[in-house]
Length: 102
Ligand SMILES: CC(C)(COP(=O)(O)OP(=O)(O)OC[C@H]1O[C@@H](n2cnc3c(N)ncnc32)[C@H](O)[C@@H]1OP(=O)(O)O)[C@@H](O)C(=O)NCCC(=O)NCCS
Image (cartoon, rainbow, N blue to C red):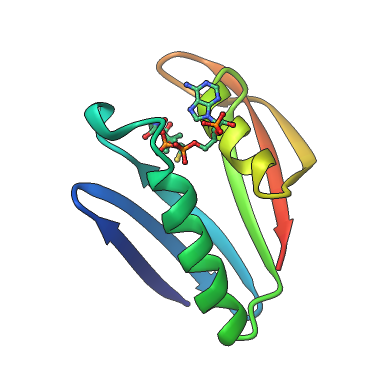
């Protein structure tokens, strides 16, 4: 298992890789830089490098209300593959799971 990081200015993407499966641990873009394609760029860079490492699937688990993250992920071709009721606390919320096939 390994943790990989990509950064652009103060934006960060962290991905955990285990075999041919990867999970997004965190993707955060500072508010002042949002909606300018920064997250898209970081993810595209990561996806290209993960393909080189023979990773086949990239997962994101996210709060159901997280419209920006879900929109970002769907724009990159993600499909909805799971729903986890009351998965998060503070505040309590369901999780949705999305997958990009690399
Ligand atoms: C999710 C996040 C990383 C997106 O970063 P970003 O750099 O603003 O994203 P991009 O500019 O690359 O946007 C790509 C697409 O995502 C979607 N999107 C991004 N922000 C959105 C918003 N506020 N509302 C709806 N859709 C949004 C859109 O489809 C957008 O494409 P468009 O601008 O052509 O419409 C950023 O909002 C963020 O840091 N959020 C807080 C942390 C977080 O929740 N991370 C995810 C869970 S780990």
